[in-house]
Length: 265
Length: 266
Image (cartoon, rainbow over all chains, first blue to last red; front, side, top):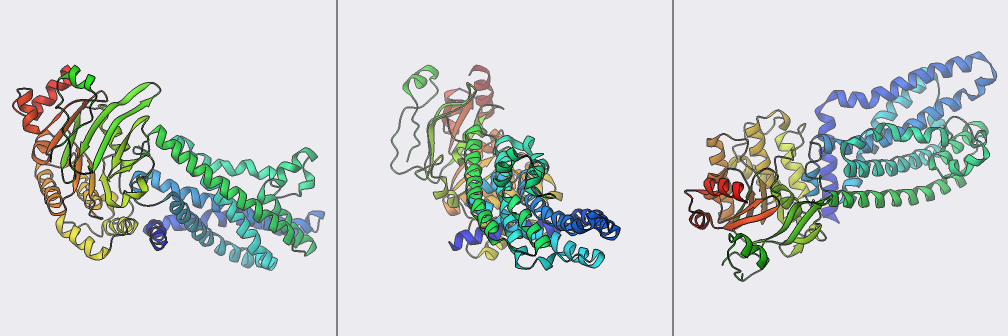
């Protein structure tokens, strides 16, 4: 067990060294969410001050943007940290070391969380200072939302990483594009009822739907829907298990196909 | 102890280049049995058999596309054989590689150390991955052995090709492996530095009693370092033996001539 923790710590140190080596990388982690928040923040201000029917939903919009960013950046953080190994042609070094796939996954999760906190915390403070929107007013529910979204982002990150191992850098673009498929179906900016009835089962099979419905319940009705969060957590456990199985299967398949040694060439 | 290969009789008689079966007394460090790797019907490695006894240095030779790298990748467990198996210290590398990875290491020109990390950071990360005890002391030893003091805090990606190779070889020795796999370890070095690295490898092998499987195009290097040589062409073994045996068998002056002769006739 201690050997395993030591290897996870070694990999986390490796990713920390990369972050430390370039202030530009660190800046980039904060830059994108901050720019996005500025755009949506100004829209929030405009809607809020317009006293139109849209004014009451302005807070929802900003909350949704912030939480969507947790999901999106969490997955990007996981996948990009993994892609570092491919870009630096280091994957075979890791595969030949005693590092186990589960330990690699654990270190990627840890690093995704660290990158997420670096990117998200300053943005939430910026949102409060510039636009007076306090995301922390969601209370303990925010922790449940954050946790569930992070788990989902890791599950997606694991599958993307597995596909990159199996298919090579041709699958790299999935890192940027895969989340967009979820955007219309997981009801980020509108309730599930806004979708056609035949899409409801699909929407409810996606864990972010529970989080965004939960967020709307907090912001509109002041109610924390623990039932939604528990269901979401259970679904996340299933998806994370399936994603890790897919990661191992794709890794095994890549060993059959060959090419792990030359990956990144 | 003698080296032995499990070569099918038909191949031994068809080429006439392979020595007869010789029994070995203990578990070999590496045993490659009936190893094949096919890609859509193409045999990248075809029925390869050889063993490497503990403490030996064996050279794996062959032209481009001969199947050396695929064979080494199967020995490392990075590629699963289509048929046959590669065993290291008694473990099947397709299924039980995790049991033996701590006792192995490798260096290959296809693989690089993370370029944004300093040499010290890279050695530290890999030392921790391999669970090296007294890591600081081990890194100090490597710094001294490979004269890395002046580049220790430099970013690995900005080193010269020769310096990168020295760091990569140092990394491959970080855990003092029992089994070391080297794919053209001196390819990017000038003759002086190449000789210097060979000296370090020889010293390590003698001190640790390690087993080394080495792929190289440098025949002088192979003659200098290797107890035994396996020559491949088009995925198959076409000859194997001690360097001197091979030169005598093919009536050549050196391994270079043997290599050229086999490349043309095999």
